[in-house]
Length: 204
Image 1 (cartoon, rainbow, N blue to C red):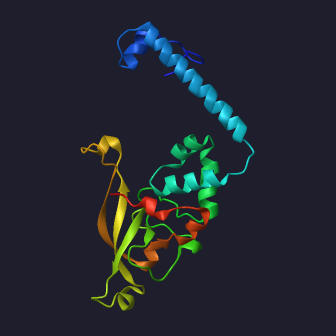
Image 2 (image 1 turned 135 degrees about the vertical axis):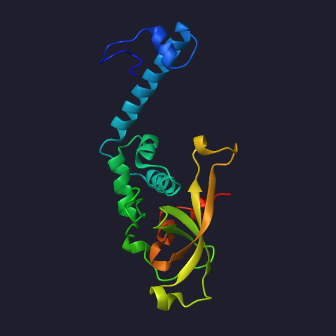
Image 3 (image 1 turned 90 degrees about the horizontal axis):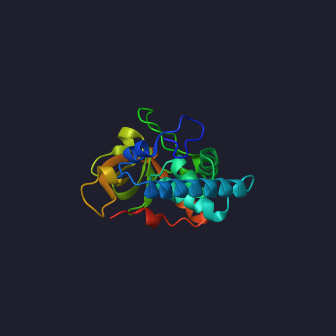
């Protein structure tokens, strides 16, 4: 819906109130339209100010942390008043594993994330589940290296829970235990050089 009626056939204020699911109140509707227009103008101004400028350290940290926490490129772009392609370029440049689309299979990890072994409690990236994970311990009761060509670890995969999927107020994260070969886990230690506190990814 276009609240201003610009660029398309305008609707009546009564119809607009019905779409917004509010009582027919022209004063309130006018306030909503004015706020929408202010937000649009502010967003346009901020994008214009950022155009052509390289990413700041703060923008890089916010983009990386938000992406690892489960936010999408478009959502992060809105926060930064940048384009999704700008955010994607940051993710690629600093060596953050990219999320795969559903059904695309296990992703290939950036070279900076590849490792043959991990430490207990280390925060890593699960290429299988497209999410950060915490290493629980190495599986040693069987010869996994001989069987799979790599060490195997039990990990706790962290998941972001959307508000509309949550039946428990105040809880916005969850997770589950899984088993992963080392080649399906990505090291994230290099991100500390950017000021990223990986411990912030842990969700209770």
